Length: 286
Image (tube, rainbow, N blue to C red; front, side):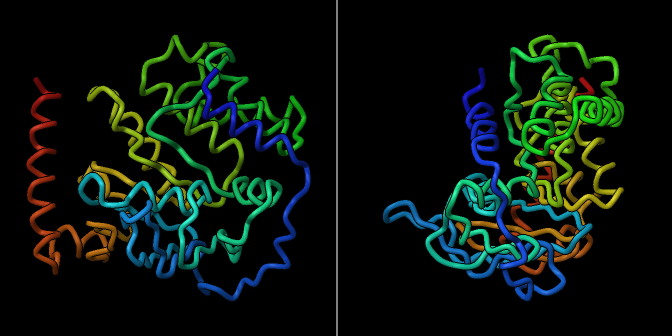
């Protein structure tokens, strides 16, 4: 059994209590579903995030780009409470993420935030259908009939309607990642975080996963993506944040940042990244 997936499910099912969201002020970050203000995180004497400010409105698709080790994935883990920063504010729909200390509070928060990882974290001993229904039934209290109906609809959405009875080991990497996305959608989250979800895939399967994410963004699903796929980020993003060395160097619309970057470091990164994109496309054509 996948350890990460097991621990997440165990945490979700261990406590039935719900956090009283009405007790939390919703005045923070007015108009934003997600708001980070001056977030700092260090590991020992090593600073990782050095004052991150980021906001996302409901229905937006936002991409975080930058070189490896710039703090992109750490930002996502701070948003859903997997990592606790030492300073700063993080609010999701008015909920103070840093104030969620108990299991019940963290569970209530993570019901609203989907997270799709680089690795698929599916239960290998469960069928695709069971992977999609187990959390909605145990955590949200849905009936088996309702959960299975939703699961079949979601599998059709990610173009895997014929794989409901298959097991993860019989699927390609791209298919497993699409199942992981469908499983996240089964919880009906307000916000989905995508952490370099194509980085572990063969070049041939990258497109099928990006197409699904693009469709979700077109439908108004609020998304925050960490990605090295520059052309994809440009196509789907309402706003793009370029990070380096634990700070946000530049932010702007996709048009502005990709075509008229203001910072020299942004221009250099994009020039190099586009060269890698062209090399990757040539390899796929070969």
